[in-house]
Length: 346
Image (cartoon, rainbow, N blue to C red; front, top):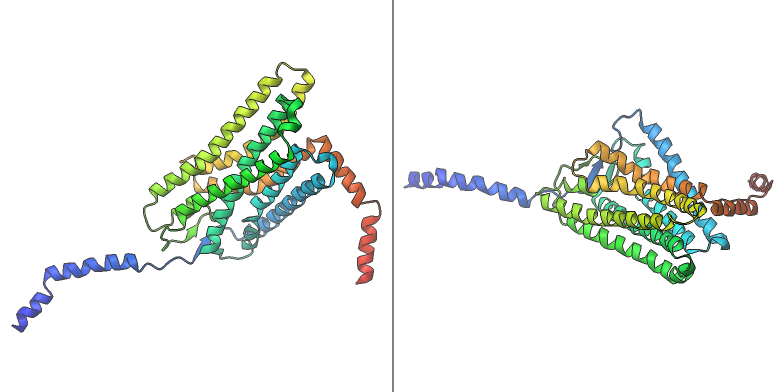
């Protein structure tokens, strides 16, 4: 009787059933990832000091250039117009776009192991889509402003009132918030149990979702559909508005045509630099991780630093206002007096 009970307990059927249990137990007992490892731009330790120096200078230039535009627009009453109001808001968003990940990337270039907590990773995903989504809509608003100014100049101040400008800015932030909330909803409930290495210098949504311990094919399609709809629709609206402007001024004087082309050249340059990398990363399905990292650097660092250059060097009014601002606050000998007083006080 004892032998038969022993044989029954360890029969092949029972062994097969006990082998099927650990699989489900392992699925429920996965350890949740608490941090991610960022591989950064390069694994070469020799390049890290160079990356620290170059991106520190870039980030400093972004802050100085964009805050200078904001200060210039707010301090000069001649620039209190819809176009410059939207430009100042664009500079503010550019500072936000550059600040959500660049300071950490600069700090990570000094350490060997680049880690980021799970919550901070989700925060980066939230802010990158909030700021970039808002900038896309704001660029469309700036194109609409130029359309009204060039195609309906007599009704410009009536159509582009201060209230309308504030509403356009609020709409851009609202659309960015809705966009990033929908994107984060795809990610926050995904199970992450390892691996936890993100091949970038910040938590980019397509790269993070690929690390989930489940099939993310449907989630990836939803991410592409969401980001693709916002970026492509904004880009098409910009193309249509610029085309209408060019067709409208085609039959006007050569001076009007030259001014319109000059204005549109600046806008088209900004749009190409910003939308190109975003569309390639989030819409184009055949991009590689190495290319994505370069393009991510482009729209998070290079575009925010180029926007002040494009809009100021091609604009006589902004350059005149900056010269006036310089003469007001940086009078000859004033800087040396301030430095001398600082040394005397110490």
